[in-house]
Image (cartoon, rainbow over all chains, first blue to last red; front, side, top):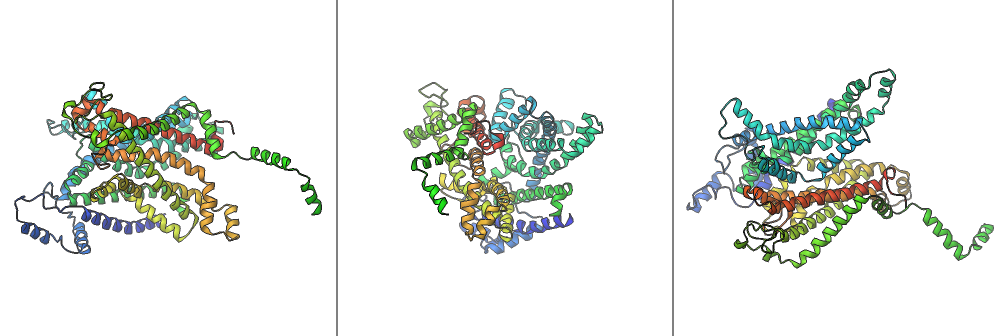
Length: 319
Length: 316
């Protein structure tokens, strides 16, 4: 197993290097220069030229790339031109918001998906199973952002149950009220995200449990007279759960992709919204940092899933 | 030998025709026939098919009669005209532009891009999967590393960055940019099927008899997995409508002057629009929902007909 994991990590290294070069070059290829907007419009072009020169923007790309990487390893991602503060601090403050939302969505997804998948499999072919299948089918087909928009319209504006923008109420007192306000703000996006995230887990768990139902160890347990309830709880559920746990890693990709839409619809100040805003302001340092972070998180998610799977499933280990 | 020949000569042309007709009737029905009988057996699927085909034809034809630049002109007199007033069936948006007309042109653009994207990305994904699955060893290994790398990229972000870099982009460049990122699912699926298919006897036989690899891949393996290809293409078409509209919604799809279902839904970003002027964005949202559900349903029916054990229709 260690060999598999080590090999996966070794493959990761060139991937990260290629990603960083790609990200860097794409940011360089973006039109405009980062200073024109930030300095006084009446400023002398010579001054701009000087700024570009001291920032090394006239150097060949590989040299700029190398400087960037060296800075990267010192934890210096540069300054945001739009916000005039270090990118690390800027992203750090936004990342907390995204993290809370992602965590809440993930927990809720599993809380919804596990009972649904089990229930559907237990009543395979009957009415509850059909209802759950229709539900997963509908959530699978409709684009996520459409549901977000309709959700925020109905529950946020028409019914007025949830806040529609921001991550915290401006009037919330520090301490418990502020935590409550934060939670209140992630409630609706979290629920909508979870309702949509369930489809993979439900379907995978359902087929896994249906397979397990017909397996020999379940038949043995049954013939030994183990009560049906215990068969599900101790035998089938436990065996079907571990592969599902591995999906948590893969779901990071979906969460990150979704964060762009969720945070835009809810004007939620996380990394996704920061990215969208930075694109309009051509804030290269922020853009490069975010694309790199999202890419590496994707990679780590996949790695995590592969590791869990190789622990759980001996067949993968042997290969 | 001679006896054999004599016997054959006794068969008249009419008999021969009759025999071949019998053989044809008994042969496995063509996949088109199976799919059609599956649709006939499933009423909702028929409805979905009629909706999708009818709607696509409608927007293609109706949009020919709409002058897009004229439609997109701002007219402050009709500011957020409600549905039914001033001849606007679906009302007008904040710029006084007809929502109904924008819906038709927008649907045409969105569907057009989705079709283009499906054709390009599926073709590429199918070829990638077939080649990668057929040639084991280094070729497969290399191609799978490219796949891994592409999977790692944050797709939506990369598309947004690319769209920003390209100065004058239009529907065609947009389709091409999307296509760079949306072939992976197809390629994985096709590869896994090709892997198991290449181990079958007919492939080994073809190899022994000296058939070229190119011919084996595209003339022997590909037709044998055609049902999978059809299913995957239908399902990715529904997904691709979501891809374009989603990006347009964020403001990085089609330019503002070119309406798309996504840009129409983006009207909802304005708190005034979302609460008071629901007609500026809700029809587009509902349209996407109906389209995606119908197309996916058609995909499910096609998938069922590809799997003999799940068919509902009588075998033709």
